[in-house]
Image (cartoon, rainbow, N blue to C red; front, side):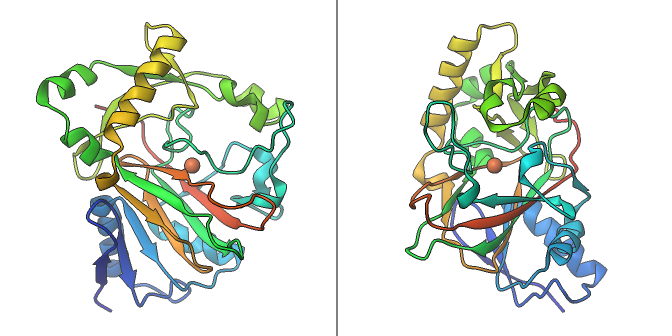
Length: 279
Ligand SMILES: [Fe+2]
């Protein structure tokens, strides 16, 4: 086939053209797609038409699907898929709608000792009045832009992560499984490219190791505010049939929440098995 790749921004992301992942893919092309994802941290393949099973099969070209932690989101009959549906946004005890998708820059499932290598998203339905964009940030560039002494200082930090702080989002049964703490380096090395990146999920981080929660969270908030600048960001405007893969070791993402949650927006999500993050 010969792969045709087109960058989508100077910051992050590449589009692979003229691919139908419902058709058999040559081993060399599959490897080229995996290489493109590791290098560009975001891979976009448009105009796909997947049944749930076909989506899981397409995602499996990039790794092994693993179970996601919010059981209420899992698709009945195809539990490798989480259904991110704006119509199912839960109401919090405060009475506010907990819109699906984190509004904070993050990488997925850091509460897990082996967080997913890749998050795969498939666009099923988008708000009819526009919006529903997802932002992607190149956290390798965020790290590279820092002065050397700041880089060296950040290398010393570890984050302590748990789902405990997000108990509003999950059932008591899920929480019992997810309360455990996982410790990760704040600066991690990509297992394929060897590049270093800032690696954290602010909402799932309880504290920096050997520090108190409140100053830890303030520290990380300021770090992200100062390093996630426009020239490391790409903002994706979804079309139905878009298949996006984001490399969780090198990139962060967030839902832009630029639409009325009463409008229908549906993404299907699969996550792929990852290794233990290391520095
Ligand atoms: Fe996410």
